[in-house]
Amino acid sequence: MSLTLDTYRLLGRSGLRVSPLALGAATFGTEWGWGAEQDEARRLFDLYVERGGNFIDTASTYTDGSSERMLGEFTRDNREGLVLATKYTTQRRPGDPNSGGPHRKSLFASVESSLRRLNTDYLDLLYLHVWDSTTPVEEILRGMDDLVRQGKVLYVAISNAPAWQAARMQAIADLRGWSPLVALQIEYSLINRTGERDLIPMAREMGLGVVPYSPLGGGVLTGKYSRDDLTATTAGSDGSTRKSLNLTLGNISERNFAIAEVVKEIATELGRPPAQVGLAWTLQNPGVTAPIIGARTVGQLQGNLGALEVDFTASQAARLDEASAIELGSPHDLIAGGFARAQTRGDLKIEARR
Ligand SMILES: NC(=O)c1ccc[n+]([C@@H]2O[C@H](COP(=O)([O-])OP(=O)(O)OC[C@H]3O[C@@H](n4cnc5c(N)ncnc54)[C@H](OP(=O)(O)O)[C@@H]3O)[C@@H](O)[C@H]2O)c1
Image 1 (cartoon, protein in one colour):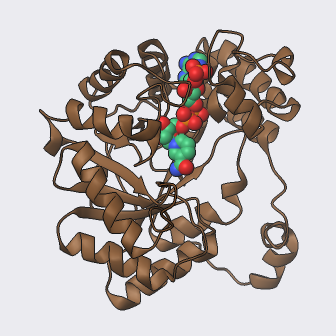
Image 2: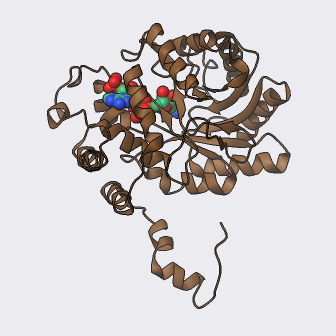
Image 3: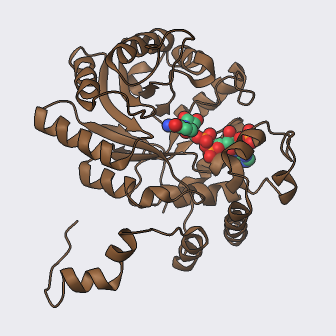
């Protein structure tokens, strides 16, 4: 397989053309204690765009607004050529209960402030960032649809929500003639394959493109952490500042080291850095539209873009699958197993067309 950033893919059941790797802008700014200063962020952005990339991912709250503000500057000359995605719900102003969350008041206020920071009059893609079970889905969908009709948002999408809720929302949007969800952003990588149970099959069935975040497990799949990092609390072995977050999130663990070991072995066989192998595995999954690269330095981004050229042998792909496999759980194991196949197909000859 050899892809390029300008080998575009369609996002879900839409005609929107996006690069097969998106550029994550959560590293734009150092307010969270890790990330890139503005000059380095500019270089990351320029490199991605020069290579043909068009799909940029940010959020209203990334680096306390700096990420959107920087993108507002960086996109000044080429706004039309880019697919700019941001998210709402996570903004919080102390003492103001309506300043965050998925409801209509928060939605409209968040979009207005994102438009101002991004220095644009429309967002290509707006995600609901984190589901919180407080707002009727009709209110969210109708609000999103109003923004689309006003031209402030072109496409709508969802992240961090239960599969059943996203499926229900999509069905309601379809029945009401409201703007459909075109993408699902979830954590998905060799260290986190839980999306294979319900979220990814749901997205395929309901027309949402899958946009995985943290495809390197926050850096663990680069192989840069060692067992010493399981207990240490200071900066990572290469001086990175992302380590304490990775410890908090549970990304640095014995299980994940075992997966990272297999990634390293295959990287050695291919003569490539482990990060490319980790990214390529997510990129090549047929259920995935575009993983989001999270790079802090130009060197990392340059290296990681090499994932577009990685080719696995069947046995290498099988070893990665095996090392990272998860229990599907009920009823998925039963459905995938022989019992259900015998029940549903028996001696019937049914050709699968999807
Ligand atoms: N929807 C959501 O809730 C959500 C959540 C998380 C992220 N996101 C999006 O997804 C994007 C990517 O997520 P992520 O940052 O978690 O992705 P990731 O690829 O799993 O981790 C990226 C981090 O790994 C390290 N790294 C990357 N390439 C490397 C290399 N070649 N060598 C060594 N270290 C390397 C860097 O951290 P250090 O150098 O600091 O170690 C970098 O910040 C974000 O920018 C954001 O746009 C969305």
